[in-house]
Structures are given as C-alpha cells and as structure tokens.
Image (cartoon, rainbow, N blue to C red):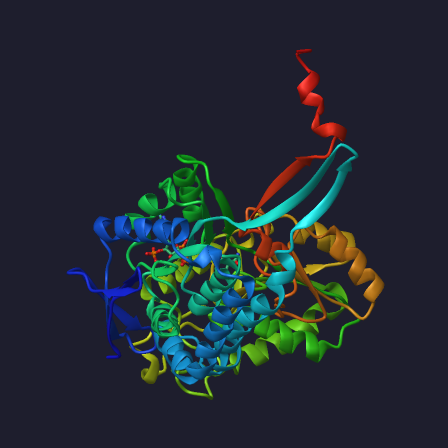
Length: 495
Ligand code: NAP
C-alpha cells in the first residue's frame, strides 16, 4: 500500500474519520487509504477558498510573482515525474509508457505554457468608443472556481484546469474522481512545499453525489469547470442554476474517424488502433467509430483485426504492456452490456468481445480489444459512448455520406480524417460538427489550441487563449472625457 492520504484545505492536510480504499485495477488490490470529506469539510473548503480570494494575497500578486509560483509547480511535477507516473499507472491501470511520456510531462507543460503566455492574455485593452469617453476592458480572475475531474486522465485534466485557473488569479477547489485521487493528492504535497498562500489550492476527496450539490450550488463559488459524463454534467448545471454561475462542460463523445481510399493503409491502420485502444479506449476523444471508404474496406478490416489481436495486454506497470485494465469491474460490466445489446441489434463481433483468459490477468479488470462490424447507424452502440476498448467499423462511398454518418450522433467532440487529398480533407473538416478535427494524425493536444466539444459534448474551452480566458472576467471601465467635465447625462433632465 502507498499509504494514507488526507484532504488538503486552507494549506493543511486534514484527516477525516471516514476513509476510502483506493484500488489498483491491474491487480484488484488496495493501494492506499484516503480521507473522505463530509459536509463539514465541504463548508470549510468553501469558506477557505472564498477567504483566500477576497482577503488573501493571491489575486493581488503582481503577474511576475504569480508566474514564479506557476513555474515552480511545473518544476515540482517534473522533479517528481517518475513517482507520479508510477502512481497514476497504479491507480488508473494506464500503461506506464503512457503516464511516463504523456500524462505527467504534459501536465507540467501546461503550467509552463500558461506562465509564459498568460501575462499577454491579461493585458488590459484600451477600446476606442467615442470622442466624449475613453474606455478600457480589465481582465480579472473569476473568483472561487470549483474543478471537478474524471478518472481517465486524473492528473492531466486537473492540471489543464488548475494551470489556467491559478494563472488567472483564481482560488480553486479541486474534486478528483473518487476512484483516482492519488496523483492529485501527491500534487497537493508538491504545491504545499512550494508555499502557495493557504486556501488558494484545495483538494476535497469524496463522492460527487454527496458533495456535488453543496459545492456547485453555493453562492461563494463563482465558476465550475467540469469534465465528465453527460449525466453528471446535467446534474451540475441544475445545482449551479440555483445561484447562477458560469460553467464549463467537457462531456462525452462518440467520435468518428473517416478513412478514404487513397490513404497509406498501414499508417491509417496503425494510427486508428491507437485512436481507440490507447488508455483502453477510456478517452473522451476515442475514435470509437471508424468509417472506411468502400474500396479499401475489406483490406482495412483484415489488417486492423490482425493487429488488434496482437496488442499486448498486461499489468499496467510493465513497460511492454500496450493495453492495461479498465478502471473498475463496474466499467467492464458496462462495456460487456453494450456488446450484448449491440449483438442483439445485429452487430457482428469480429475481434475480442470478452474478458481475456490469461491467468496472470485474472484479478484485474482486463478486456480484449473489441471490433464490431455490421452495426446499424440507428443502433444504441452507434450513438452512445461505451468508454472502453470497443470500436465499430462502417463502410461509406462518398465524402457527403461520411459527413452525414459522422454528424448523425448527439455528440460533437472530435473527428479524424485520413486522406492524401488535403483539399478534400480541409473541406470535410468544415462540414464536421466537432470541436477538434485531426487530419492524417490523431490525439495531438497543444496548449496553444482551444479544446472542447459541440452539441451534447458540452460547451466552453480548455487550453489556448480561449480556454485561459474562460477563467477570467471582463470589466469595462468607461471614463468621461467631455469638454468642461459635463457628460451628456448631466443635461438629461434639463436642470
Ligand atoms: P463522471 O461519472 O461524470 O464523474 C466525473 C466527476 O464528477 C467525478 O469526480 C465524480 O465524482 C463527479 N461527480 C459525480 N456525481 C457528481 C455530482 N452529483 N455532482 C458533482 N460531481 C459529481 O465521469 P467519469 O466516469 O469519471 O469519466 C468518464 C466520462 O468523462 C466520460 O463520459 C468521458 O467522455 C468524459 N470525459 C470527457 C472529457 C472531455 O474533455 N470532454 C475528458 C475526459 C473524460 P465521483 O468519482 O465521486 O463519482
């Protein structure tokens, strides 16, 4: 066991009587015990974050002072990168190669990027409005921001939100998923050592169903940034409507990858495997629908299935492992039930579809990479998010048909286009109803680019100038410049 973890509130680690065991999904073993917050700690964290914003030094620091803190957080993550990667792997079942080369360095990079760029984004702007008045727009922090994150990229998604929120001068209450709080609680230790003023960064662990309403409806909170499922997103919007507050919703997806006849088949197959099976398919931007053009359809399937069967399942801590376990037994049951339902609706399982028989993996929540063919566009699995290693392959003839199929679901998070014809690909990108489109690549996120979905995939952006400015409020200041100091309003009643 890695030990015991406490909540982090107002610059202090707080142990509570209620505890929760944290599991390793590769082995089914307990790896840590974490304190769980009650209503009392929820009230304490709300009061602390509010106090730190209203009366603490953080929002008043000069931009250079704040930048210094943000850069030290980035360095703290890098200094502890190996331990954080191991911890994330143990807690999520994500293969160690992924946490080492993606999650942890990317988490640090977002802090660096925000530190190096946010000053430019916070510049106040003089706006020319009229001869009789001057005006400027001030950019201020929103205030107290509640960040609620899922279990699939626990540290990375938390760091995206946190880097933006802190750089903008907000104080933060971070609620990790109950399944995966460990890396975030390790980050709390790093931030504590750096010496951020008390109450600026707080972590509250506990069940979202129990704490959510208190955190998201309270008047002391100015903004909520949520990443997770649609179901919970809708609940949070209801809570937040009680005291009207800004929200960002990064929700689910059912993304399509459109693969044209003219592609380099090997590149398209290799990349499409990653676009669904990375992190066991537990990615909001997983390309869970492959739309393949008719002439290459059979050859694509043959190669895709052959390679999918050779993906190496194993303990997430092993560097050779290509696919680890799902996050929990409940998640695996959900995946299985989707496959059963798809079969009942006529889908054919052409690869996987079951729990692996390998004895070494019997205690973890493993599941085979699964490929379904003959899936009707009206079936449940074509439209709903499975959030596991399950991909559907459908055939299309022309680009309009592909766009129609890709856009035919309620989600609008991301899409891929694979074609050597870049003009066609760019034109198609314009027709797709999704917030991120990758052409001849997949999965690259850049701190410079806003990320976020359309339709039921949510609203608001993360990253980029647009994402950063979500955490900023705009204040217009208008100052009279009329001759003799007599503005128009002075004459209105004719006195
Ligand atoms: P989830 O069940 O919606 O949970 C997300 C977070 O919300 C967790 O911290 C959870 O806490 C909390 N929560 C649960 N009930 C709550 C309530 N009533 N009030 C406030 N918070 C509450 O999602 P998940 O299963 O962790 O993650 C998978 C989902 O996230 C998928 O749908 C995926 O597509 C989506 N996702 C989207 C993006 C994106 O960028 N669009 C990125 C990653 C994941 P507990 O753990 O305590 O329940």
